[in-house]
Image 1 (tube, rainbow, N blue to C red):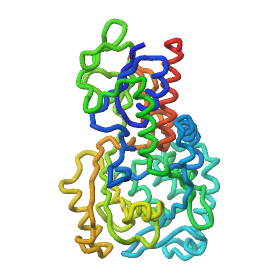
Image 2 (image 1 turned 45 degrees about the vertical axis):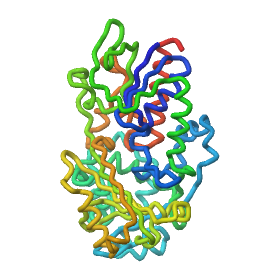
Image 3 (image 1 turned 30 degrees about the horizontal axis):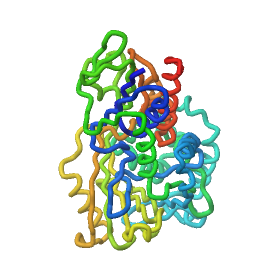
Length: 408
């Protein structure tokens, strides 16, 4: 079969990798580079992701792909530390002593929180899809635990939409991040960054597929027994972009999937400003929800500078001059002269990921609908928490489905 794949993010690349062995593939990517949200900047002689990434010990589909591509031996396991910025002060929350010393929760609050962490792996997330995270936490743990601990986490991931997020997402998040040691969380990272993964995929599929960079899909229509995409005929089409991002009028029976955008600033300086913490959630109001100090996870010696991400999520229109606002706030809040910022770069992605609102389970897009194939962050493997692993699984699933349908 001749197959069109729309989108050169992780799911599209994985689908092309598996389908290209038996089919003729054209992959369309509107940008001039591959990777989607896993794309990277080229900084000197290295690469660093435009949006921060790490992986978890449970990401078996991702590891299987890495093994197939010959890059699994480049996976490192490192410690990821967390903390909260409250009332102008940084509170690390990793060791038992740090957690017990955190002044915004009582001992009883901390005990209930620890119990929920243990229970999270056994809770049925499907039964939590129809209530909000706020409702669940306040019912189970009380308002103080929500406002002092969970609200900053929800704000860092969902911004102003935090009160609409389902308890299914939150419990899944707690469960996946409960793999903690005595002083931090065990997280994975590829040597050379996840550019290593994207580059390996591109090299493999480049032998079997036509990769059309800078070529957005502007027309998509049914043809006898197939489809026409940008006036080229295909037997099948796989869309890895949100259904509402396809040309108007093509998909009529699927409702829009709630998505949110991300504005992520990467900046470099000569020192650490988050007291050795990798992931710092902002409880105090700020134009970003979290400060992710990449070089408190990956040693700064590998880059020659300290690298920090400022993460902001949005729905609708992005506030004007958000880059200036974020940078000015960061410098003021952490007492950094603006001249000490060696460089900064800003990436904005309007469809950064699904917004896991209450009832999202019923909005999951099937792999096949209206004559098209769909796979991406909106697919079942990415519910109730999106991840690189889920995107890889979705690409594998849709390739298997097409292979079965096509007799491959």
